[in-house]
Length: 294
Ligand SMILES: NC(=O)c1ccc[n+]([C@@H]2O[C@H](COP(=O)([O-])OP(=O)(O)OC[C@H]3O[C@@H](n4cnc5c(N)ncnc54)[C@H](OP(=O)(O)O)[C@@H]3O)[C@@H](O)[C@H]2O)c1
Image (cartoon, rainbow, N blue to C red; front, side, top):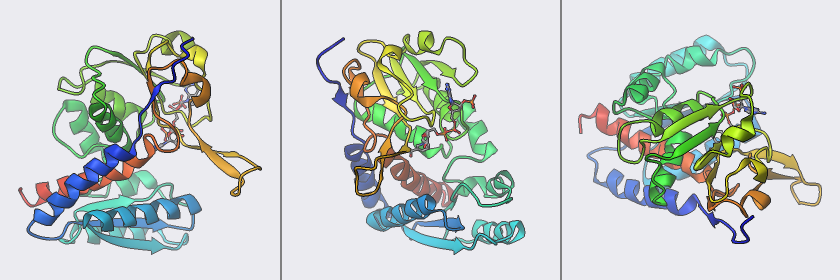
């Protein structure tokens, strides 16, 4: 095992650079860019995310319209709100904060958002365009991973990228981005999931290993090839009674041991985390420009 610790790929310099570019771009546009965020219920994590999104909008000069609604809000009321936002010319991006409480039908509401304002990139129209290699609004977290690779000059072309996790918000769209026939992509991609056999045999073949599993420190050093690049998308809250908060955040990768074997690795927190909001802002500006024919 290598004794040299891996290079840490921090997300902040990447997200700061993107936000600086967006701030200049937003200031040069003929009218205000607007993002509407819908938060239903009082999930503390969702409230924290929405607060961070609002702050980031203000930072780059995007108008943020928050719709904080009680958990008792009905499907029809949300449907009607989305209809009105779809028709609101001051709103260029609509974000429905997930998860929704109770029996609300997430898919029905997400697919009611106009694809032109779907800044989360979850609408099947945008997912289809992504697969077809057409310009579109792309899912923010995987898009953020692509931007990190580009920033740190890690070219996936011809590399074997193994992604553990096949969710619609991370694993699958990330595979679709990496496999495109374009600069910054052109990877050979393998997707693994909970039904994959001999997982370690596959992950050990990765030049670039991406974990999006949702299991604390699941990826251990024996699963990683010496010198691989390791991207940890996971964010897991684990008990830490000695800390003030009583918990800490860890990734899907056992950082302490894997960082001794990898050539580069994203820490948690501070790695992929800051990228999601940066790409949300970027998508909102992109949506504004497309809506206004710019
Ligand atoms: N940085 C960010 O901003 C950001 C954004 C989104 C998510 N995340 C984090 O990323 C992680 C993944 O999120 P997600 O939404 O993609 O999670 P998810 O929807 O729960 O999907 C997890 C995936 O991991 C697979 N998996 C679970 N256990 C496995 C195992 N033992 N072996 C192999 N595969 C296994 C699942 O396989 P099956 O499909 O077979 O069940 C599934 O495909 C979470 O920690 C989440 O908090 C971070």
